Image (spheres, rainbow, N blue to C red):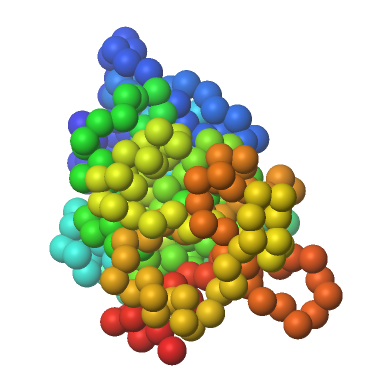
Length: 334
């Protein structure tokens, strides 16, 4: 249970670990974290500003930014930048949901974003030195705000859990689901999440090997999309359960028109039209390793026709083309 009081900011409280689950770490590996409620870290009510980078609360926020295991243990992430903070708050306000923001950290002299006027969110001002340390970017002069936010309930980590019929609760409407297969580059993953939001896809499924969607570089590229999209982290067994339950067609983006296994279909308006009424999973692989063997075997392969002689496109660029062409027709696909 998450506790918030105007007088004191509390991070979640913990007991001894009762159960364990797996999360994607920033280095692409999987580590274990507890599902118990993490310890509280008080920020005394008299603290209105922080000037020292060695402040315990600053150290806590820094670890949230740097460590996947730490942020999933605490169920919180540090969002840096006014734009993603605004995007997340607007989205949560639009669905009339409770904000996941526990504390707003503003650079000394900066104004509270107008969207956050008259809200009970606690605001603490920090020095330029503290903001630079929190942001983790070299040119921190443009960074005016950061926010401590709880990881939303729309994120589900199914690793270590058995496949079951609960997949019906993963996505409110699984008509179009983007599946990422081993995407370790945070910039690519964040851009794909942002594109999925832009083209109204229903959610994202992360297969093993993907980086944490709440990694600071992912959050920066996603511009708040990690908090707006339903995201499920699981394995092929979970994905197959979802596909069977909703009779979903599995497509995978592939750079080669012909493979050792079979020929790929070409992405076209005709193909898009033929899939308009189908429930669809689109699988994209990493730039370095491409699609996993299982993705190649299970999915229908689709390639983007290119007149140029380049071997392939950046996965986030290719993904944007796929997401646009295969978006639901009622969302304005041309």
